Amino acid sequence: MERLLTIAGSDSSGGAGIQADLKTFSAHEVFGMSVITAVTAQNTQGVFAVQDIDPGIIKKQIEAIYDDILVSAVKIGMVSQVETIKTIADTLKHYNEQNIVLDPVMISKSGYDLLQPDAKEALIEHLIPLARVITPNIPEAEVITGRSIKTVVEMKEAAKMIFEMGPSYVLVKGGHLEEEDSTDLLYDGTDFYFYTSKRVPTKNTHGTGCTLSSAIAANLGKGQEIRDAIKNAKDYIQMAIEHSFSIGKGVGPVHHFHNWYKA
Ligand SMILES: Nc1ncnc2c1ncn2[C@@H]1O[C@H](COP(=O)(O)OP(=O)(O)O)[C@@H](O)[C@H]1O
Ligand SMILES: Cc1ncc(COP(=O)(O)O)c(N)n1
Image (cartoon, rainbow, N blue to C red):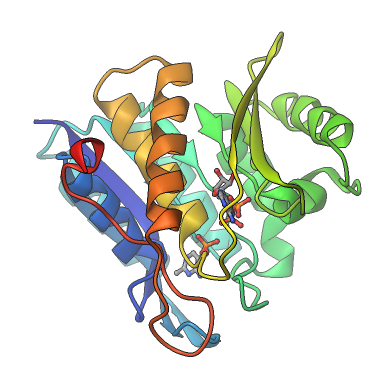
């Protein structure tokens, strides 16, 4: 069985972060493992506190896994501070990990900074070049490139700029563009590929980015080619959003399916 690792933060309300990643892995019938980088006190309405985990124990967690278990693919989510980013990059480099999906988590749907402002440069310098695929949403792509993105043409320009930072593929997600369809675009350094789905009219999108990146990692871990891995992950997130639900008073979570493809 494929072994998937998520390196990310904990969301106490279970909608995003490590919890969303592990649910996604289970639904894809792969074995999930986790390295926790931060603990958030969070619910559907907001993030109320963050405790970063000491980089030393982050390193030990990664070592404990790699010294014992063959990892099929890794998803990286919330990494919040400079030392955390450097530690993760150095340790994954040491183990020569190639199958990395980087979700450059910056701001929660409720507007809380999950990446400290001074950590952006470290993310660009140390983690982006290691990624097989990086999956920024539009606000994240704007921060990374320093450009405003309002159209598909600007999404393409941003993808090109981020590609120059060293990942093998860039997937710019279009969930934040308020169009009838939700279109993500993949850039491989030469061509663009579009993944379009009907926008679900819901406010319950807590955990969409975490879920999509984990589904891509699970599919890559299974040996799927990048374009199939993204297409299948996009189908999964579409269904998870269609079945999202209103728990809590704010932005509710998406739903994870076992045997989703048969549902
Ligand atoms: N309302 C929606 N209906 C259908 N797909 C959506 C919707 N909102 C987001 N998505 C999709 O969910 C995934 C995550 O998108 P996005 O919201 O852009 O990222 P993030 O969760 O990181 O902010 C993308 O594949 C996007 O196209
Ligand atoms: C611990 C943690 N990690 C990531 C997110 C982003 O969530 P989303 O997938 O909704 O952008 C979050 N809210 N909390």
